[in-house]
Amino acid sequence: MLYVYLTQNTAMQTASSGLAPNTTARITAMDTIRGIALFGILLMNIIGFGLYKAYFDPTNNGGSTGWSLNVWWMNMLFFEGTMRGMFSMLFGAGILLFTGRATSGTQESVTDTFFRRLLWMILFGVIHCYLLLWDGEILYTYGIVGMFAFSFRHLKPGKLLIGAACILLVSTAFSVADYIDHKEAYTQATAARAKRAKGLVLNTKETEAIAKWNGIEKQEKYSPQQVQDEIKARSKGYWSIVQHKLPENVYMQTHFLYFIGFWDTLAMMLWGMAFFKWGILKAEKSRRFYLLMALIGYGIGITINYFETAHIVDQQFSILSFYRNFVSYQFGRVPTTCGHIALIMLFVQSGILPWLRKALAAVGQMAFSNYIMHSLICNFIFLGYGLSMYGKLQRYELYYIVAGIWLFQLIASPIWL
Image (cartoon, rainbow, N blue to C red; front, side, top):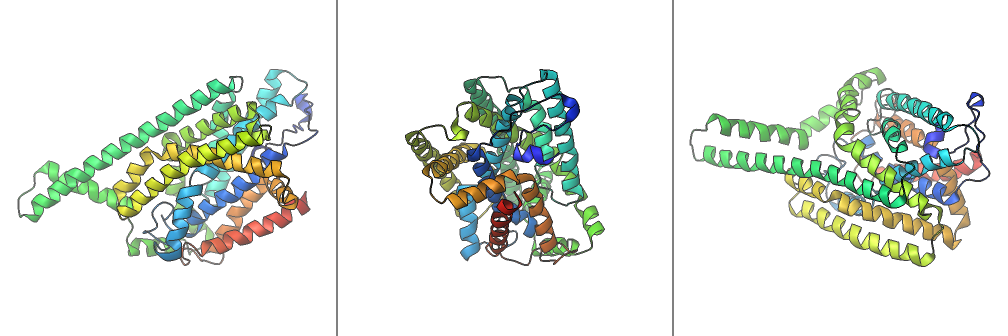
């Protein structure tokens, strides 16, 4: 039953629900987007599976020079947040598919069925996080946020887009507050350290400022010993790893969800609803429309992403450089996501490489199974109950594993279907 949520297959096969949905055809364009987004998510998630605290900051683990740096640049320019954004947009569109294809039964029946399935999704998200050991999982978030997004399904596309933009501004406001707080902490600590270096006595406020920034550095920048301790902890047996990851898992499904995940996901779900109602996600627009959308999206998004990424490198991956870039994060990430969608729609409309389009659509139709497979395969490769490769590969070497998983799923998904 959980497969329905990620694939957005709207066939409601609950006999007691009294629903008789129309399941004559899937929207191939959306399946293709979903397949590509799923593969793109693995491009980013593989860092969390294989390296410690290196998702944004490559200096923590996995290499920050040579090919590893090149891969980090590529991810920051094209993929960070965009694949997750496309997936969230498709979930929002899927809500409309779910309710729109039900040809009989009351609205209460549709709502009841949808919310029961979201509850199942939340449950499986908990299992995926705490027992299948993937703290970056999205099922729990989608289950909770989907309940809110469902309420907006009747809004017109323009209002949905305005709502999404407002929510993203809320997310940006959190980032601004974070940056101001960290900049102030850094400024005060730097001044206090300079005073101490001159042999002067610090007052209580100055001592606390240094302690606060030292705590931030400990949370953001990890010593080789800290990395080795984490590698050792994840090289143990299954139940030991379950206990070790418990605090991080709790954080991701509480604090991170409330302040980051919820707003980000809800905004993109509403964006997806708007794009679905306009026919953008169904490849119904003209080639000229998608070309213009790609040019504008990439022109704005990649430009902002480039200056953000260059700033981080210029600042030698300083803590403040990351928080500064989160302020403009959505302004680069959202247009780039739209550019990706436009490019995929052009690919779908072109008719080229039909075998690849078919395979990607099959991957998208099996999104739930393939998504869980990513966790099972990667955790077996990297954690102690499997091959124990955690922290042992350079960043660029992780993508050999990604390529292998992609190839397997491109072959296996069409065969299974």
